[in-house]
Amino acid sequence: MDTHTEKLEGTPQDRVIIFDTTLRDGEQALRASLSRRAKLELAHAIARLNVDVMEVGFPVSSPEDFMSVQEIANQVRGPRICGLARAVENDIIQCANALKSAEQSRIHTFIATSPIHLKHKLRMSLEQAKTSAIGSIKLARQYCDDVEFSCEDAARTPIDDLCFMVDAAIEAGARTINLPDTVGYTTPQEYAFMIEQLRNRVPNINKAILSVHCHNDLGLAVANSMAAIQAGARQIECTVNGIGERAGNCSLEEVAMIINTRKDLYNLSSGIKTQEIVRTSHQVAQICNMPVQANKAIVGDNAFAHSSGIHQDGVLKAENTYEIIKPSQVGIKANELNLTSRSGRHVIAHRLTTLGYSEQEYDLDQFYQQFLNLADKKGAVYDYDLEALMYNNLLEQADDHYQLSFLNTTTTTNQVSSATVALRMGDQSTSEAATGNGPVEATYKAINRITNTPLNLVQYQLSAKGEGESAIGQVDIVVESAGQRYHGAGLATDIVEASAKAYINVLNLLHRAEQIEQAKQQNVKPTQTSHQGVSHEA
Ligand SMILES: CC(=O)SCCNC(=O)CCNC(=O)[C@H](O)C(C)(C)COP(=O)(O)OP(=O)(O)OC[C@H]1O[C@@H](n2cnc3c(N)ncnc32)[C@H](O)[C@@H]1OP(=O)(O)O
Ligand SMILES: CC(C)C(=O)C(=O)O
Ligand SMILES: [Mg+2]
Image (tube, rainbow, N blue to C red; front, side, top):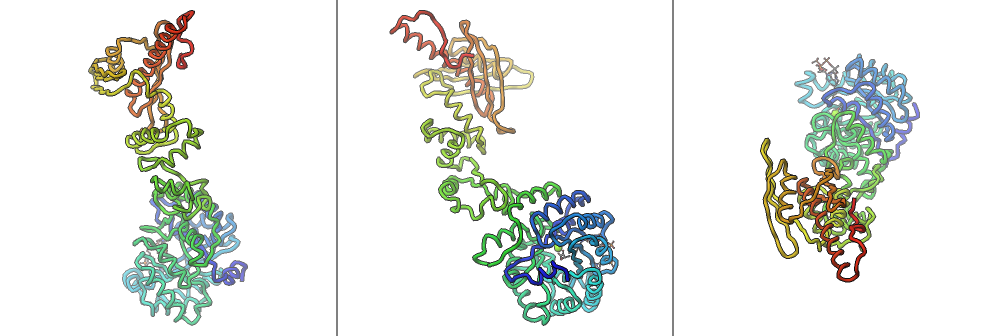
């Protein structure tokens, strides 16, 4: 007996064996099978998770899969390396050959036992299936000490037939008996009952470890696996991200974190290095071209994100109000607090603090209203948006003389653009319309008509603050007036509005400069007229 089998046989009752089948059941469900190199890369990643057993292929299925299993057996250390084989002589010999150089290996052989599979697929009786199973297990044992046998479609097999097969398989030398819910048909209660029945009715049942292998057709793969474990099974077959035939297999990360998080309930442990979970999940998703849904438990992008104000406030006060797992436990640095119009003041203040703004520097209620306006427009608000809002507040002061109250532009291909602008100037509001070569020129002309202060535009620069379509537009302009150059900036989700704001920013600078000048003339006789000291001078 080799050491690993001893380890499994001596497994304390509270230890669950994690059997990963990402590279066999998971891989067989991909649109495109994996190359040898890809399989090897993933095998190393899955080994880092510290799974107990790793089923890495079906060696008889193709020369490439044979070589993949061979290479993994040769190079990957840690977990026991397993290959799958039908209850067919050549399958088992090929499997044994591929596994030859593994430090620890397992041959997994199977045959279906349910009436549907026996009648329609195998076209044999249960007795014939038993004979095949016994022959295959015995043959496999000639090559390998550790043999697993699966009653395919066990969950749809009458319990008497299952007891009959399991007893024979253990007698033939199978060390692990797997009872797959091949089509994801069973329910937790029913599956637990099946395990209990086998434990109570099969005389030699204690000579084998009972294993479960659940598919997710009804979304119950994880629940069924855990119910079976509570009923006495001690191996869970699962895949990273739950990939696998049809709706997939039981998800490794979910069972690992259930075992880890609910020790109080199950009193079990696994050897999984949970900190490797997210990294491995990303590798599997990428290499298998199988993206993970955002709300997938444990590894989805949203699994550690909090989006609503009440939750964000709670998490900021004490993480365990809304978090049952610490992000660091699965290899994520920190949780995420998404900013949307469902966020509240607490999270905004917290984010601004992390961005370096002290609470004395802004009025939270006022800033929150600006945030909500932006969030309603953009959907998602990012740190750079908050910084832009802060900058905008620097550009737009409540006592600004000129304030944009309305802007409408129309643009049609090969035609002049038009703009209608309304400005509030102190207590008055005036609107004007103009046309131009583009919406910005039309807007600037309309503003000029209102203010009667045409400015000489020297530079115009548009840049995006943020990423993608939802970035905020920032317009920076330099204008010349009375021999001086002024820099104005404007930010808005609409770039024409940002252009208007930049222009109005300069008008307000000029207005302020004039006011300072007038005040100086009334109080102190200035020695010379200058716009020096206006902070936005370019
Ligand atoms: C539930 C599961 O996930 S089982 C694993 C499924 N994975 C795979 O099938 C991937 C690898 N498979 C393959 O590469 C191929 O199907 C092979 C190499 C196994 C077989 O290919 P082929 O010989 O061309 O047969 P094909 O796949 O068309 O049909 C399967 C045959 O295996 C038989 N068979 C199915 N399961 C078993 C079994 N456990 N033991 C013995 N025979 C079996 C079927 O009855 C059928 O036999 P038939 O040709 O006498 O009707
Ligand atoms: C080969 C067996 C274990 C299987 O994948 C299944 O029954 O789902
Ligand atoms: Mg399966």
